[in-house]
Amino acid sequence: VVGAGEPTVSTYDAYAGRIVAEHALRLGREPGQRLIAQTVAWQYARRVVDSYDGEMDAVLVQPSTVTTDVLALAEGLAQHQAGSEDVRAFCEKLHGLLSGLPRGEKQRGKNPLHSDLARVVDALRARCQLLPLVEAFNVAKRKAEVLDFADQMALAAELADGFAEVAAAERSTYRAVLLDEYQDTSHAQLVFLRALFGSVHPGAGPAPVVTAVG
Image (cartoon, rainbow, N blue to C red):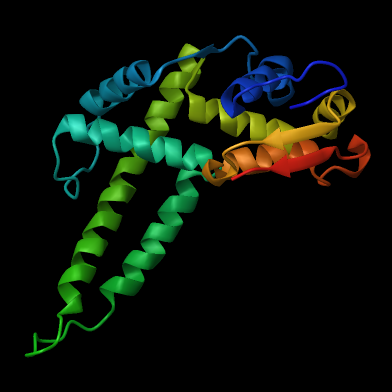
């Protein structure tokens, strides 16, 4: 991000961290929440997995793998700004659609797609059964007042997209923005940057010149 004086260089995560620290109270969140590393997040998730007694008949992997899957799903939801109910509704709809397809007999020269579809159906059931663990993982972090990097970016995107004054403050500081490695930008990062420096908020002032390099 470039201003009138010396350039300000920052990673997406560091920039999001500043926005969250300065504006988290707008969302009723404490600005001093501690940012935790992936290893610490794994420990939070593992405690949730070890204490969970809900339905898990479709999850056929070891607890350590379940923990990794919970972390990956939680990060994916945050990075795509999706909720557990969104994923559950999608999985249940697709599960119902695939389960209702005819399961024909294997014929010579033809690939029996029903076996592949059955694996997809099983994976959808397993994903739905992981969602309560993701929710418990997020609750545990909120109670401890900690964030992981995906949480931080999702919060920053919500702040930038929901409050024109946040964008106005950043636009008054920076007149030109250079985004590097743009091909790796996640959905939450895209929402964050577009809300700050695009034309999302009419009252936020003129948008700066934005150049994306990928």
